[in-house]
Image 1 (cartoon, one colour):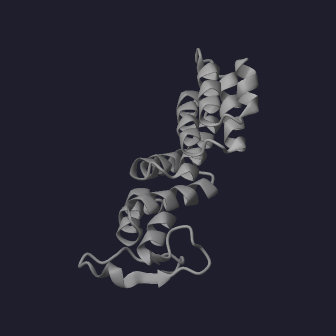
Image 2 (spheres, rainbow, N blue to C red):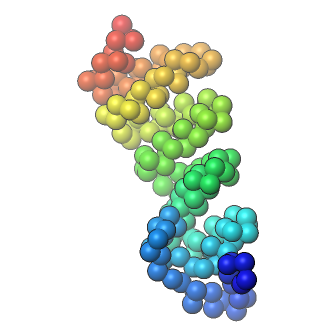
Image 3 (tube, rainbow, N blue to C red):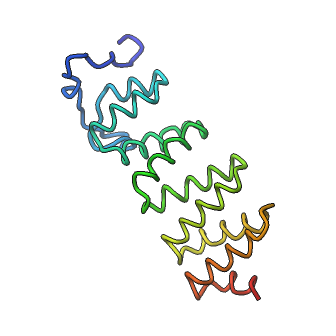
Length: 168
């Protein structure tokens, strides 16, 4: 189209012919339908997700959309897609860590603590992750949050001296 966007996919199912190799932007998938780009540009995130799943699988599609929205500064929308990606792939520590950071930035401390705790379960020796979790737990209004975080880290990583020290 004149504005650089792509027309919506045809209703006869031939949208699969719109695949193209992505060379400059690997944020959606190795192959990406032009329809997905068009829906993203128009702001129709639901349709973009629906079409992206066809080409890259549900978890990867939702994660890719979350990352793209995150880069655009659309934090609330990104959170929704990170949450779906986490539900579909609960072992992706990077998704969970980013979601925890976004929750924290949105002042959703309870959700952030929960996500950091799950990330620590998956990556118990990640010192930067431990620090973020302990720092947030220490500032939390939630009763006992700091103690639970320190105990969790100390149990998962006996070499976590900061958690050991705070528990002493």
